[in-house]
Image (cartoon, rainbow, N blue to C red):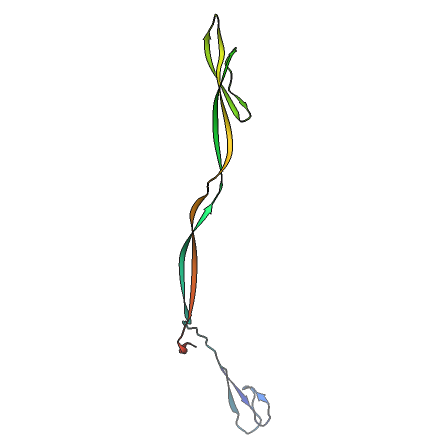
Length: 151
């Protein structure tokens, strides 16, 4: 951008081009200069980075608490005469199933011959086991540029 202004030497004041000088001296034109800035970006290698990934394995013992349930079955002879079928019943953790048998007598009656008792037993079992665990590790190596012209 350039702008021009005219200066009257005799008066010592700045005058614009539209004004006419009263003196006999010629007008002197002084150019005004402005600088402009242009910014550019360049890609420059300043170094490099190397990444190494590796997997390491280790053996570890785990011992989780496992729940187990077992049943104990016992047969109990009862030999008791009953009037009708006996339903399955529960006494605590024990389920009782009555087995019936018809017995011939002068009259026919139901007799509980035997009961099957099923009891639930709860216990906690520990079974340590060795398991393989893997873990990834990363190593980063930064290598600076050695070219002295880069700075």
